Length: 267
Image 1 (cartoon, rainbow, N blue to C red):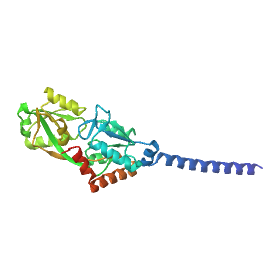
Image 2: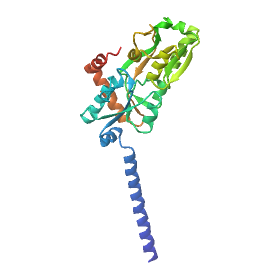
Image 3: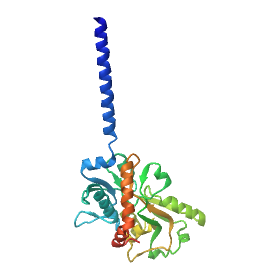
């Protein structure tokens, strides 16, 4: 009788253990649901974009909508996922916040003048580039600065967590001059600092500077450190990375990307 009870107990334990194993497998499967499926389940593609960069991502004060090249690219991704380009939800990001927002899952991807670097590839998936630019220099005409060397001892305003500072430091070293730097959280802050004289030069990618150009300022004939922009996704979201790369490739081959760049007058 005792043997029968023991056998029954062992059988029950084995059944329970097997059940737990299958439950565990089921939980793991849920935990590793593909990035695309998670987006479909949510019913919207959440994307981090700039809201203060003319032509790339700028909030329209009249409509409240964010508009620009990168928003249009986000719509193309949403169309690939849902068949409906309107199923996007934009979140304002800066060079400092875009990585953390992606890391904690608040957004699915970043399309925000995110420069592709080998170091960043260790942390994120990058699509093939959708635009290539170079670091430029915006100055007030009244300062009379015409060449990079004339910035010796001057203060350059750059965006927090951007690659601009290190790029300019390399050139300054080659030219034998010294630069000072002041970091700001947004491009409007940098533009205001240039206007008020707190900085002598506003530096970021040249196509971005074009959005802050007016009659009192000029962009120097200077370009350095080519910047390739890519769509950024989490390392774990391989399927989403493949999809966004396909979107970029399709937009390039069809000419749609060139049309959008021309539409937004990016140069």
